[in-house]
Length: 194
Image (spheres, rainbow, N blue to C red):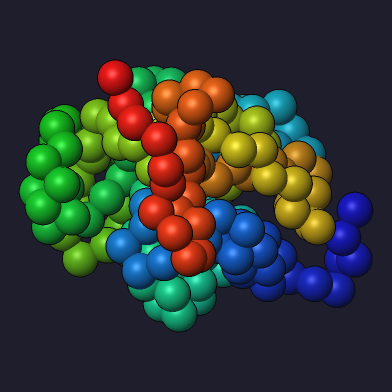
Protein backbone atom coordinates (compact mmCIF):
# COMPACT_ATOMS: atom_id res chain seq x y z
CA UNK A 1 0.00 0.00 0.00
CA UNK A 2 1.01 3.61 -0.60
CA UNK A 3 2.58 5.52 2.28
CA UNK A 4 0.08 7.12 4.66
CA UNK A 5 1.93 10.44 4.28
CA UNK A 6 0.60 10.81 0.74
CA UNK A 7 -2.94 12.20 0.88
CA UNK A 8 -5.89 10.77 -1.02
CA UNK A 9 -6.12 13.80 -3.33
CA UNK A 10 -2.44 13.41 -4.25
CA UNK A 11 -2.90 9.67 -4.87
CA UNK A 12 -5.89 10.22 -7.15
CA UNK A 13 -4.02 12.94 -9.02
CA UNK A 14 -1.08 10.57 -9.62
CA UNK A 15 -3.32 7.69 -10.69
CA UNK A 16 -5.31 9.84 -13.12
CA UNK A 17 -2.15 11.47 -14.49
CA UNK A 18 -0.65 8.02 -15.19
CA UNK A 19 -3.88 6.88 -16.84
CA UNK A 20 -4.06 10.03 -18.97
CA UNK A 21 -0.55 9.42 -20.23
CA UNK A 22 -1.04 5.69 -20.87
CA UNK A 23 -4.36 6.23 -22.63
CA UNK A 24 -3.34 9.37 -24.53
CA UNK A 25 -6.21 11.29 -22.96
CA UNK A 26 -6.59 14.91 -24.01
CA UNK A 27 -8.97 17.83 -23.66
CA UNK A 28 -12.53 16.57 -24.02
CA UNK A 29 -11.74 12.94 -23.20
CA UNK A 30 -14.38 11.39 -20.94
CA UNK A 31 -13.25 9.70 -17.72
CA UNK A 32 -15.74 7.87 -15.53
CA UNK A 33 -15.10 7.37 -11.82
CA UNK A 34 -16.67 4.65 -9.74
CA UNK A 35 -15.96 5.09 -6.03
CA UNK A 36 -16.92 3.30 -2.84
CA UNK A 37 -16.01 5.54 0.07
CA UNK A 38 -17.02 2.63 2.32
CA UNK A 39 -14.26 0.50 0.77
CA UNK A 40 -11.78 3.38 1.15
CA UNK A 41 -12.54 3.25 4.88
CA UNK A 42 -12.08 -0.52 5.00
CA UNK A 43 -15.78 -1.38 5.17
CA UNK A 44 -17.99 -3.41 2.84
CA UNK A 45 -19.25 -1.48 -0.18
CA UNK A 46 -22.46 0.41 0.54
CA UNK A 47 -22.26 0.21 4.34
CA UNK A 48 -20.31 3.21 5.62
CA UNK A 49 -20.15 5.86 2.90
CA UNK A 50 -19.01 9.30 3.95
CA UNK A 51 -18.06 12.58 2.31
CA UNK A 52 -14.54 13.38 3.60
CA UNK A 53 -12.83 10.81 1.33
CA UNK A 54 -15.21 11.79 -1.49
CA UNK A 55 -14.06 15.40 -1.20
CA UNK A 56 -10.41 14.34 -1.39
CA UNK A 57 -10.99 12.05 -4.38
CA UNK A 58 -12.88 14.82 -6.17
CA UNK A 59 -10.06 17.30 -5.49
CA UNK A 60 -7.42 14.97 -6.93
CA UNK A 61 -9.47 14.39 -10.08
CA UNK A 62 -10.17 18.13 -10.39
CA UNK A 63 -6.47 18.93 -10.47
CA UNK A 64 -6.02 16.71 -13.53
CA UNK A 65 -9.28 17.87 -15.12
CA UNK A 66 -8.18 21.49 -14.92
CA UNK A 67 -4.67 20.72 -16.20
CA UNK A 68 -5.60 18.50 -19.17
CA UNK A 69 -9.19 19.51 -19.89
CA UNK A 70 -10.70 16.03 -19.54
CA UNK A 71 -14.36 15.64 -18.58
CA UNK A 72 -15.00 13.70 -15.37
CA UNK A 73 -18.19 11.73 -14.75
CA UNK A 74 -19.17 10.20 -11.42
CA UNK A 75 -20.99 6.87 -11.29
CA UNK A 76 -23.88 6.41 -8.86
CA UNK A 77 -24.49 3.16 -7.04
CA UNK A 78 -26.88 0.46 -8.21
CA UNK A 79 -29.84 2.14 -6.43
CA UNK A 80 -29.75 4.73 -9.22
CA UNK A 81 -28.92 2.15 -11.89
CA UNK A 82 -25.30 3.33 -12.09
CA UNK A 83 -26.35 6.62 -13.69
CA UNK A 84 -23.61 9.23 -13.97
CA UNK A 85 -23.26 12.73 -12.54
CA UNK A 86 -22.41 15.19 -15.33
CA UNK A 87 -22.61 18.86 -16.18
CA UNK A 88 -25.90 19.48 -17.99
CA UNK A 89 -24.18 21.44 -20.80
CA UNK A 90 -21.93 18.46 -21.53
CA UNK A 91 -24.87 16.04 -21.43
CA UNK A 92 -26.83 18.19 -23.86
CA UNK A 93 -23.85 18.66 -26.20
CA UNK A 94 -23.28 14.88 -26.29
CA UNK A 95 -26.97 14.02 -26.66
CA UNK A 96 -26.99 11.81 -23.57
CA UNK A 97 -30.25 10.72 -21.97
CA UNK A 98 -30.83 12.75 -18.82
CA UNK A 99 -32.66 10.94 -16.01
CA UNK A 100 -34.55 12.40 -13.07
CA UNK A 101 -32.90 11.83 -9.71
CA UNK A 102 -30.59 13.59 -7.31
CA UNK A 103 -27.93 11.36 -5.77
CA UNK A 104 -27.75 11.24 -1.98
CA UNK A 105 -25.46 9.05 0.13
CA UNK A 106 -28.07 6.27 0.59
CA UNK A 107 -29.28 6.34 -3.03
CA UNK A 108 -26.49 7.19 -5.40
CA UNK A 109 -23.55 7.01 -3.02
CA UNK A 110 -21.48 9.53 -1.10
CA UNK A 111 -19.11 10.14 -4.01
CA UNK A 112 -21.85 10.86 -6.55
CA UNK A 113 -23.75 12.98 -4.01
CA UNK A 114 -20.63 15.04 -3.31
CA UNK A 115 -19.74 15.47 -7.00
CA UNK A 116 -23.32 16.49 -7.84
CA UNK A 117 -23.12 19.39 -5.39
CA UNK A 118 -19.79 20.60 -6.84
CA UNK A 119 -21.01 21.09 -10.41
CA UNK A 120 -22.45 24.33 -11.82
CA UNK A 121 -25.56 22.75 -13.37
CA UNK A 122 -25.51 19.03 -12.54
CA UNK A 123 -27.69 16.29 -13.92
CA UNK A 124 -27.70 12.51 -14.09
CA UNK A 125 -27.27 10.72 -17.39
CA UNK A 126 -28.26 7.15 -18.07
CA UNK A 127 -25.13 5.95 -19.86
CA UNK A 128 -22.00 7.08 -21.68
CA UNK A 129 -19.13 5.49 -23.52
CA UNK A 130 -16.10 6.99 -21.79
CA UNK A 131 -12.52 6.97 -23.05
CA UNK A 132 -11.19 5.82 -19.67
CA UNK A 133 -12.18 5.10 -16.11
CA UNK A 134 -10.93 4.77 -12.55
CA UNK A 135 -12.56 2.27 -10.21
CA UNK A 136 -11.88 2.77 -6.50
CA UNK A 137 -13.36 -0.06 -4.48
CA UNK A 138 -14.43 -2.40 -7.31
CA UNK A 139 -17.67 -0.62 -8.18
CA UNK A 140 -17.79 -2.04 -11.73
CA UNK A 141 -17.46 0.84 -14.20
CA UNK A 142 -17.13 -1.28 -17.35
CA UNK A 143 -20.68 -0.61 -18.54
CA UNK A 144 -19.69 3.01 -19.16
CA UNK A 145 -16.47 2.40 -21.14
CA UNK A 146 -16.16 2.29 -24.91
CA UNK A 147 -15.13 -0.95 -26.51
CA UNK A 148 -12.24 -1.96 -26.39
CA UNK A 149 -11.20 -1.51 -22.74
CA UNK A 150 -7.50 -1.93 -22.01
CA UNK A 151 -6.78 -2.71 -18.33
CA UNK A 152 -4.33 -0.29 -16.73
CA UNK A 153 -2.57 -0.97 -13.44
CA UNK A 154 -1.50 2.32 -11.82
CA UNK A 155 1.54 2.40 -9.56
CA UNK A 156 -0.74 3.27 -6.65
CA UNK A 157 -3.00 0.22 -6.23
CA UNK A 158 -4.90 1.22 -3.06
CA UNK A 159 -6.73 4.33 -1.87
CA UNK A 160 -7.16 3.75 1.84
CA UNK A 161 -8.41 0.16 2.02
CA UNK A 162 -10.00 0.21 -1.47
CA UNK A 163 -8.38 -1.56 -4.39
CA UNK A 164 -7.85 0.67 -7.43
CA UNK A 165 -8.21 -0.46 -11.03
CA UNK A 166 -8.35 1.59 -14.18
CA UNK A 167 -8.76 1.21 -17.92
CA UNK A 168 -8.44 3.22 -21.07
CA UNK A 169 -10.02 2.35 -24.39
CA UNK A 170 -8.80 1.99 -27.94
CA UNK A 171 -10.63 1.77 -31.25
CA UNK A 172 -11.62 -1.71 -32.43
CA UNK A 173 -9.15 -3.30 -34.84
CA UNK A 174 -11.15 -4.41 -37.85
CA UNK A 175 -10.33 -6.16 -41.10
CA UNK A 176 -8.36 -9.24 -40.10
CA UNK A 177 -4.98 -10.34 -41.40
CA UNK A 178 -5.01 -8.12 -44.52
CA UNK A 179 -5.86 -4.93 -42.65
CA UNK A 180 -3.35 -2.11 -42.34
CA UNK A 181 -3.58 0.07 -39.24
CA UNK A 182 -1.00 2.76 -40.04
CA UNK A 183 0.29 4.22 -43.29
CA UNK A 184 3.96 3.52 -44.02
CA UNK A 185 6.13 6.60 -43.64
CA UNK A 186 7.14 6.80 -47.34
CA UNK A 187 4.59 4.94 -49.47
CA UNK A 188 0.87 4.31 -49.52
CA UNK A 189 -0.16 0.64 -49.09
CA UNK A 190 -0.03 -1.44 -52.25
CA UNK A 191 -2.49 -4.08 -53.32
CA UNK A 192 -6.08 -4.08 -54.36
CA UNK A 193 -9.34 -4.70 -52.70
CA UNK A 194 -11.74 -7.00 -54.49
